Image (cartoon, rainbow, N blue to C red; front, side):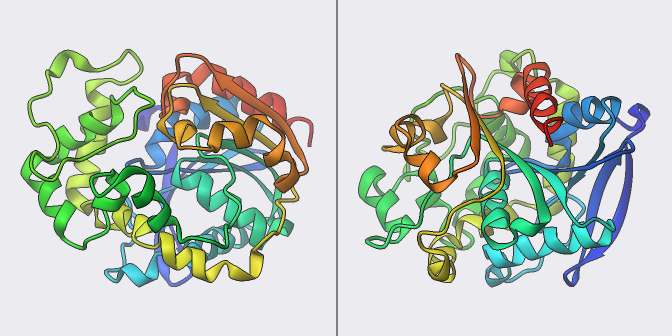
Length: 318
């Protein structure tokens, strides 16, 4: 991707050094990745936005890629990650930016809009719908009640356990497992079997090249997966920290896009919440919900051209 004119630099934000990839001139669009992803997951959007008169900026989030990865899991709460993004927006000399999020990046972007709506012109979120804070049960307890002990988010909780499992399987095979998965079924990691290790190399979908896998593998071999796991390890902590925002609304213009084969769309209650008008109550300026048929979780890579069009068509209204 180096030859596509995407430039890279390190910036100081919120006590850490953050790596950002950027291209273009114009209104800033902040692209926020999820797990197990990197700035690189937005490569198609960066080029498209830059060509459309925007300045696209995609950081490696705290714990990922070339950005610092503090060792303590306590330094990966939603307040830390949102703090990194607010500091990045300030460092860029911007009052407000457009934001596009995916997976954990979508969760963080929802939080950014709850905590600091003054920083966001409009939001396009992919894959993970807004989740109103429930008073009855902590999120990990709720997930365990629905899916049991072998659900991937529950398996990610114990420090060191999944690090060892991913090391056993090998970084490249882990990434092939995750990035090529195309199923709405919940992701389970059986305790007695672990992740499959014998994936045929030919299984890459058309939107993912060996070069892409090579880039992800090199970066995750360098950083490890603990940074990414630490986001999951703060699910209950985030629930506790966000008590003051119980019932608060996301009051920026929003477009939400999801693939109908995305496991995040098939968590019990999510589809109904998105479709029956409940999400509109919590996100009153929700302008549009787009469900792409036959599309999986890594939507911005799998359907890059379509997602690029949706993003740019939406942002030009603001």
